[in-house]
Length: 532
Image (cartoon, rainbow, N blue to C red; front, side):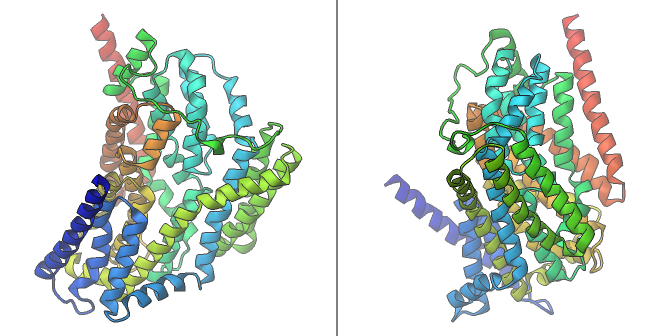
């Protein structure tokens, strides 16, 4: 009865949202020379309804159907089917979707063959004290850069046995795992994240005729990924200085003085249900089982770009994902002694894990096509263009993306919804070309999504970080939030605002690191003064 009531309330709320959006759009909007007021209804519905249902795939699908009926009231459902089906008729789209599948399968084989675990075992021998235990945990986050979920599960499950003897709180370990999962996977030039992100970028490249490609756009935006870069820098400044603040400091004092790595009132869970962490079958652990395929991946990428050029980067990435999966299976067989059955089972685990990203990408592309047919981007530009300024637009986008991700608990969903809506706007601010405002806006959407996701208690990665480290989820959220807000504010003030005025990103990096180190030194001085 309770579940039925909640479902009914959600449906009623969604209907109210839809009617409200339509009414407000009609009241405050008008017909521009090239689009009607209702052209923005599908995109707005996708954004707002996610707050109610917290299901990105469902909300994107509903938005596609609504937009299809706005285009053709008689053949709405058929139009939606044609829009989504047409996506699979373009080879460029299939390349991206297949690349996601192959990358996820590759990660699964590396886990199943024990390659990652062997690397972790090697790093364990480097731990000598609490500081080095935290450093190893953070470095593991860099080692498992291929996928954010794999990062969280692998590093989280291994970190607790490594750190408990040094009296490091579970809250701190959960933060280190969470802070080096999405930022590392999001910045890595090869990962399941980049496969998702460049898929969205490539669609914008084709729609706006930017004369680039998704991979090149990703590389151009990298220097402006201020939140991810600053968070990773903060992790190491925090570990090396040993200076925590807020609830995290209290958790660390409890662990060090009382020997309680978990709070007395903590509600704990374990990672023993994550069978994907276990190597399949009776295998030989060897770090080369992971190192060689990863090295092959970079060799394939570099050689492919040299031979075919960056203009065919998508084909290079797709080919590299296929060859890398093959090399990982060969290494699993030759070095780990993994039988063919277990290789295929690990591959299938990865294929199953790619289902949700593929669904989200397909629906996001469908919504983009619907918005294109309705000219919603042009409507926003003609209606609100006089209110936007290139100097504040990227910072505003960063804050808005963070709000959406915080409320919905999904970074990928936030990216898939906002990129088709906001990038055409920034493109217009750049005078119809791929300019600095568009590049910074792309970075701001990606980073704002990660920032909001880190801060959200309903985020899947936040929850997985709590579970993987056996940390009380509420305690993890409460201790991590001040750190995420501090770095988010630093990214806004030291990154996106100055960058929009033309400040080189390197100067923003340097300024942020100076602020972090100064804060750590001031904290040390204050603590010494109090003790003295």
